[in-house]
Image 1 (cartoon, helix red, strand yellow):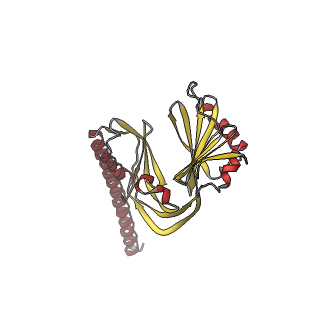
Image 2 (cartoon, one colour):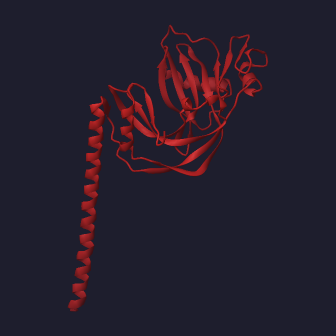
Length: 273
C-alpha cells in the first residue's frame, strides 16, 4: 500500500470536513444573529405599541428606479365622450362634466379621472362577494382596458366598498397607477383612475434595506399605535403629497417596502425622504 498517498487522501478529507463544519457553524451563528436582531426590533416596536404578527427576516435587495409618464386628462380627452357619450355639458372647464343621465366625470389635478354613473346609495350594505362579477360586468359595459391591473386592496368608506386594482410591473405593484372601483348595495357605481402612459427602467439602482430593519422606520408615525403589522412586500411608490402633483407629467417611482396594518392603514418605508 502507498502510505504517503493514503495519508495525503486522509489529510485532504479532513480539511474538506473541517471547511464544511466551519461553514455550518457560521451559518447557524448568522441565523441566530438574524433571529435575535428581529426579536429586538419587534420588542422595540412593541414598546411603542406596534405589534408585528409576521416573520419578515430577509436580505438587502437592489431594484431599478423607474421613470414614468402619466396620462393627462382635460376637455379634449377622448375618455370623456367614451364614458359620457357625445352629449354632455362642461360645468367646470377641464374639471367637471355631466350628461343628461346624471353620469359625471371629474378630473382632479389633471391625472385623476373619477367617473360616476349615479350617486352612492348609503342605505344598503354592499356585498364584497359580489364585487368581482359586478366589476367584470362594469368593465365590459364601458370597455375599460384592465390589462396589467390586478386587485390589490379592499377598504370600506362611507358604507361603500372601494376595490383597488393596481398595475403590476415585473411582479411589483405600481402604487400610483390604479383603478378604484366603488361598490354600494346596488352594484358598482363608478371608479377613480390614474394611469401610467409610458414606463422605463433607469440605470439608477436603489438598495432596499432588509425588511426587519426597514420596520424600525415605523417609529416615526404616531397614527399606528395600538395597531398590528399583518403584511409587508415591495412596491413602487411616489408620495404625491410631497410635490405639486398637478404639475407632474414625468416622474420617478422608487422601490420601497410597503407595510399593511390590521386597521387597513398602509405605510411606505422609503429609503430616502
